[in-house]
Length: 219
Image (cartoon, rainbow, N blue to C red):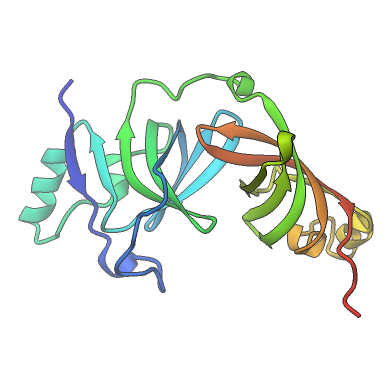
């Protein structure tokens, strides 16, 4: 099967505030799964049991059957290139090469594949890290800690709706917000945490974040 590349031209649909010049010093990571949702500037993919959302823009390329034909048709119609939805559909199996831009996942390349990969998360065994929170946002958590032998480490985890957060006051905070609460309501920089996570091809997805000690209050 011959596959061709096409650069997606989203023009004004690029997310407002996204840098026009991006320095991809970050390592390229790869995720493989099934497309669950599409938007003008993003694609959501279920990777094993985890939903991941990737931002797409004019720098994103797509490798899929018929991409070349659709690219020519778009150019004939006066457009720089086809829309993402013209080339990739919900339910398609894809492999996404991406960069983690401070918790925002930017898709550098989206490639159509024959299958989404393993049907279960068995290949991504649960792991555990203990450390101190460096920063926390709605979709990411960064910690630092000390590994065996005294070596220090930094890790950043993806946070989503499936991440369970456990800590003092979690029940009260959730009740006050109708049963829903954000990790930023419960976890803060300086807190000691235990994170149970899965390594999804280099992306660390937090399944559970447990606050073991709150940061000391500033005097």
